[in-house]
Image (cartoon, helix red, strand yellow):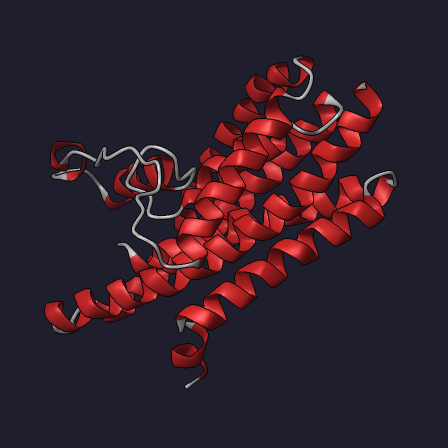
Length: 183
Length: 59
């Protein structure tokens, strides 16, 4: 339970703040929809078609000195705060950076904030379930685990690419409707 | 079996195109309705969960 809370609460908080910050961009007409549309179509095509690509990602890792010698509760809190929001550590999926842009499309600050908190809970919750699931494979052969991870990552990238293309198609329709309003 | 089939280049192209058209059509139908905002919020939260779950592959 502590593990789940350690991942979910920081993620909800961080994504709530992100939604407020990105909502400020929505005052510039068409900027966010056009950016989101171009991003979703480009990375969606690369990931869904299996073309060589690297998702935008920070390469930061939790320093070992932050973990070693700390009580298990503090370790869980550090891991949860770093991994729950999903932004600062290595990220293999381009969909991650579409989320702030999509949050900025909300017309009201309150709905953006609520959606941001929900995004944090969804990401942090799913992430912690993965971490808990990984614990089952701690004793497995490292080579087998590595190959399994690579295979799984390719499958998730494919899915992420399809999700990005779905969003890209929807954003094209949204941009066209906005252009109809503006011109 | 289905995994091998789904990752073939023509199937990838077909799926990618189909999903793109589906997203466009769905949004074109809903864009002026309140349900567009709700559908958008559900999509964003779903994508966040997908991304979080996908990272189980990268401990």
